Structure formats: structure tokens, C-alpha cells
Length: 345
Image 1 (cartoon, rainbow, N blue to C red):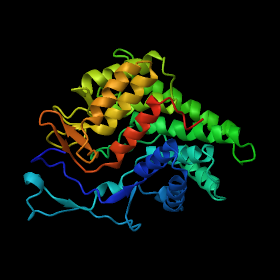
Image 2 (cartoon, rainbow, N blue to C red):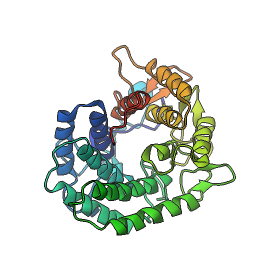
Image 3 (tube, one colour):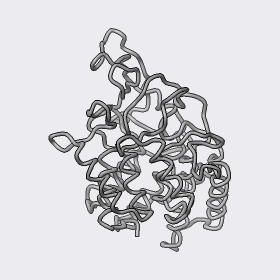
């Protein structure tokens, strides 16, 4: 993530979050056969006790992915340490539960044949989240430090409850307690708006009580947590763009001073976050700005049309994992948004 720096990670694994977002992108793009196969893999991956759910697995389903440093290797352009395995496998990232429930509802709405056990699995995931959403976690950026109450994790807990309620409204034959989930949805919403929003700056923050900004708050409007014309949404989009932006692109969060992730050094603009900005601009009624940024992002692709995880604006080069599913998922979703298609109904 920085040439010659220490932000080097082993990405040879499958993250559940990325898997659910890939499923959603396939549905959005009309690749339903591929989406069905991906959905079936996802159901197998998350089966079992929700408390034992891992955020990532090995390519053959491995659960143990111990992280080690290999000091005898110089690393790419002297970027060290070189690591194998990934300690993030032990982290708690509560947003994943909401991502899974959202993706499975999207598959159902798109007309994919529902598996008999799929809804029971979602009930199990929601039951676990109902009792744990008030707890802190490491968040989607896999912060290596003390757990916090990340706004994005809470918003995705709201998504889990909201999609469960909507699933019951769309399919009355499904079992479930809609009133209880509405109560959970309302409780999460109220807490996030109270503790995760800075009224002085008119922006949602990275975590409760923090002044740090986080590009994941750009997803608030995409999830439906607040309507696109809400002043808090518009303020958040503008704040993220102003404070995290560089040449139109967006960083995940600031790495200046005392870094929020506990790591030294810098990193590039995160391409998925930059596509989230495209989506947010489109939804708050700035389509010209959204399309301009989208076209700029397309220009960053390699000669074979691929994107890495990040982009070094100063050096004009791609950084991080290559190719990166997260970035391409963002591209697909932004293209669908700009085309005016709503795959979720």
C-alpha cells in the first residue's frame, strides 16, 4: 500500500464481505447463473454457529490462517516485512452479517431460486447480530488496535434488520418477528444518528465520539439508511470529499499524524471508496460530477482494463493488491447506478 513501507498483507484468501458484494454485482449486471453459484457457495461458507463466523477463509475453506513475517525476503521494491497468512481472520467485523443478509435478499428479489435453508440461516445470523450490534469491533478496514464503535458496522446492523423486515413484507409466508426487527432497526438508527454524527461539522464520523472521517460513511445513502436529500448525507459526502480527497480520488481515512489504524506510513487513494463517491454524488443529485469522476477512474485502469486496490496520485501508479475485486465491484455498481438501474427493486 506504500512502496518501501510496512503496509504489506497476504490477500490470497476469500473475504465474506467481498464475496457478498460480488454476488450483488453479478445480480446487478444480470449474470444470474453465476450469481446463483456464488450464492450457493456463500450459504455453505456461513453455515454453522454465527458466533463462529469468520470474516475470511482460505481458498479451500481453511479456517486457520496464521500470520507470519518472512524477514529474509526483500519484498516488492523493498516493501517489507513480507507476510504470509493474515491475522485479521481472528477479528470481529460486525458489518459482515449485514452484508450477507443484504446479498441474500437481493438474490431473492432478483428471482434466484431460494434454498430451503437460506432463510433459516438468515434468521440465525440476525439473531446473533441482535444481541451483539451494540458491541465494538475492528470494522471493515481491519483496524489493528482497540475495538471501536464504527459507524459503518452499526449502519450495516441497521441494514440487516431492515432487509429482514422487507423480506417478510415481500414474502409473508416466511417465519419471523417483523415487529421485533423493526424495533432493532429503529434502535440502531437512533443510536447512530446520536453518537456517530458530528452536528458542528454536519458529517458522520468514523466511530462514536471520533473526529476522524471515514469513506465508508459514503455508503449511508446507498444502503437507504437516510434519504439522499437529507442534509446530513449531503454534509457527509462533502466532508469526505474535501478532507479525504486527492485529485478527485478518496482515501479510506486519514493516515496523517497519529494514524487511526496504528500503523506507520501512508497509503494511496482507495479505488473502491472513490467509486462509492461516484454513487453518492449520483444519488444526491450531482450526476455530472458523478460521471466525471467515473470517467476519471476508468482512465486509471491498466492496459488490460484491470484495477488495483489503491492508486498513488503523486506517482501515477496503482498500489496494493492487483487485481482487486473490491475495486471492480465498485466499478460495476457505479456503472449500474449511472445507468439508472435499481436491482434491489
